[in-house]
Image (tube, rainbow, N blue to C red; front, side):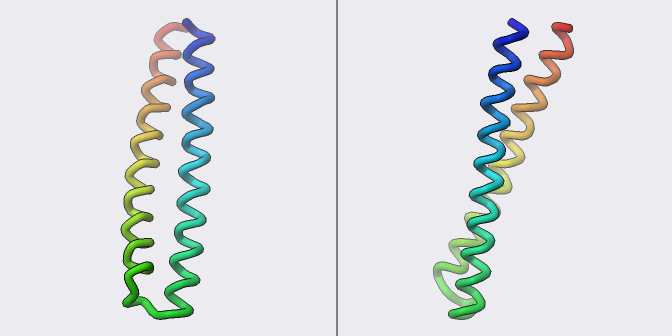
Length: 76
């Protein structure tokens, strides 16, 4: 059980890392588009909305990792 939880935590950490990478790429692209075209652009607005969505996903993944860590502490 303990090893399975550790493996599951590892998988969720990789998911968290992927969300962080996507967030950085989104912010970079949105900023570049805003500088090039202007703030009032459909792609810039979509990029900002996607950044908020990715932030929400980050919070959900972080909560899942904390849940698994608490389960691991209870086992030990």
